[in-house]
Amino acid sequence: MATLLLRIAAPLQAWGSNSKFNIRSTEREPTKSGVVGMLAAALGIQRSDDPKKLEPLNALRFGVRVEREGKLLRDFHMAHETTGKKASHVTERFYLSDAVFVAALETDDKEFLEQLEYALNHPVYPLFLGRRSCPPTLPVVLGIRDEELLNVLKNEPPVSENCKPTRIVYDSDEGGIPVRDKPVSFSQLHREYGFRMKKEEMFKGSEHDPMAEL
Image (cartoon, rainbow, N blue to C red):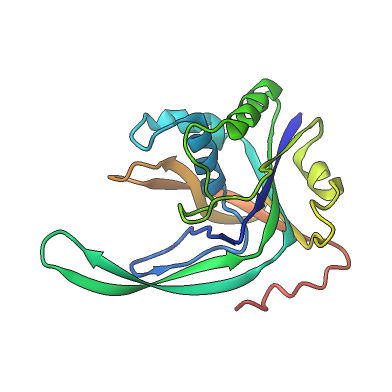
């Protein structure tokens, strides 16, 4: 078993999973659909390509360690319709500001992880963290570890001196909560998402209040 580690950090990032209408929300940590989208961009997979190209990426076990929670930022954006009757309306877009995460992707196919590692270092399309306005800071790739995902996320040193892990969120086949966060198709004409099971663990001694941002 091997695990590819990614550093997910930027001044702003946004990980929507249930945005509707004029309110574009963000989750508190990177979503699997968002990270799979970043991998697809690195590999050169287009939105119009056969959705089956996403299957090897969806098969990866996914997990995130929260290094720095960041702060919730709300931005008001004026959108203008260019088709039919002209109209303008205000949208609310939420971002995570100054957050840092370590994302992990696990499989028993180490060669596939090496292909992903190369692609992320030499991406076909630009990488972004949830939205095109959120490019990542470097480095993105931390390397491949010859261990299973949870061991790596629990034992990997913090990515910087001012970070302290607070919690881990990961794919689980045993219990957890269902989230609609498995990309079936990124097509602009028919986006489709399936469900995955997610679990969360707190680090001992963490002072983070999960309700603070609500």
